[in-house]
Image (spheres, rainbow, N blue to C red):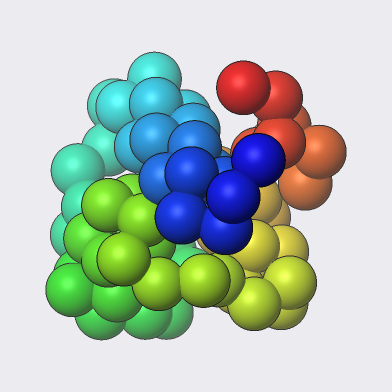
Length: 71
């Protein structure tokens, strides 16, 4: 799997988990102390998230970090 495909899949998974929680991007951004544009870029696969960012997102979504990789 190429990097672009991987980051897109991670972003899609984050968006799916966010929607399942009933949150919009602003809600997730507030919960993990990021700005909405950063969340948007992550979900669109436009940026390669750091491990720590993924940790913060999983904590905010209240899911184990490995849930972000189930695609």
